[in-house]
Image (cartoon, rainbow, N blue to C red; front, top):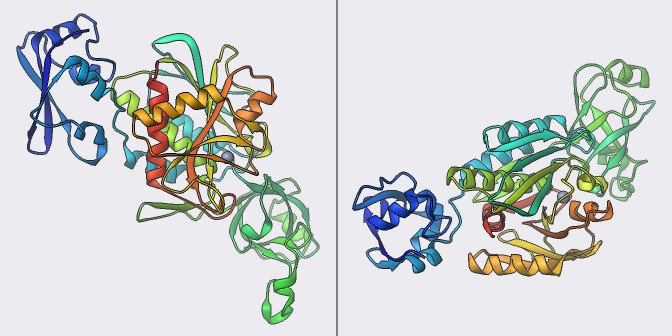
Length: 432
Ligand SMILES: [Zn+2]
């Protein structure tokens, strides 16, 4: 362990870290005297200087730096403790990426464009080895500092949606659901029908007795089920034949409009489950890459495309995996500890308890890094972590994710929950 004093000084809107020569020289010889996170701080410092510095930003982007007192001397060991922190997260990137992904329709089974969007975003990082699974998912591997305990992280790009079950005599469409939700949660929503032949057709999800002026109290009393929910197409059709002429067939995919809106840090949209999880993984990858760091272990990022129907991550992960961290939304509501401002560790859901040992390690990491987290149990929930377990994956599995209100309905979360989730992912990636 190197010993020496490092100081912080403030210059305008930046802080500078000042370290004595031998610390810098040691690093120049490939030793990391002050722990992994400091490598990026000292990376560009000349080893010949007696005292030197590198500016680091001050402000909300990395509060860990701000916890250190300016002008105070720190010994190397103390500094390692203090700076064993998480690299800055680019919240703007996280939100931009998320909004872009939310606006790409990706009902389960029709995810190619969303997967391509994620793939293009990953391609910016040359350290990643990217490949598609035959099932249509995406895998990115990052060589870690060690290969003794390879890790996987998974999040899913597919969302709830529907398929055309039948073209009615009226020209309207009867649907079948993709994923678990209630029809009333999409009633009145705009939608796109991806016609097998020809252009996508816009429309709305309505009950078959929608007008109160025609159907009176039946509007309220109609059961919202497969027989009464239909798509009214924004096209001139009043017959099965006319609808078929639009290129629409049984089996065509139907996507519900996400209606993305961001206000006061709240992100309101359909399908935050689990596009928010993907955005957190992307923000973590970017933060690590920009800080010139890499994961402690060989790491596989797995972006699945069949989660909502229960088998997303059943395949596509490497055989030598030791652990799998599923990153998926936390269920917020009555009786739940989860909320829209925190990340949640789910210790049990419909598939039973997750891996206690991994959960305990994650809790410890969260406490060490002051990550705001909750621990919760989801009564009606399954994850890709369990899908992997059920497929025979012999690994420790845990599940974390941002709190999402009104899940599988018109969902909402907050940037605080997204930042907390990203931070926890980073802490996990960096933990030896
Ligand atoms: Zn999900």
